[in-house]
Length: 132
Image (cartoon, rainbow, N blue to C red; front, side):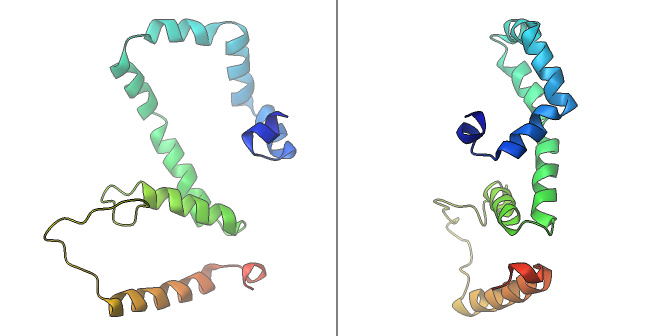
């Protein structure tokens, strides 16, 4: 039931539960350590932000590894989409992206050329079993 709620496979959940980090967190919760930490941090938004910043490089590294791995095309695309959506320049982000008033427009010819290059790159880097 937990795997279904998290939208992951049963084996994926089993792997997570077997990780030493998961067991450490589970023990902390069982011993009340997490709730004590929450009480200590309550009302201290700046401290919470600093604490969360520590996880950002780790999460970004995981996304980059997923985007560059060769085994799972679906995971690669999902990770690439997440990375593009977080682009500081917002160049390729989903949703409403408003160009600056003086931003140059991209010509149709440039878009077609980029499309062609992207297709060639995808074919060169995608394992043969993923190509239809």
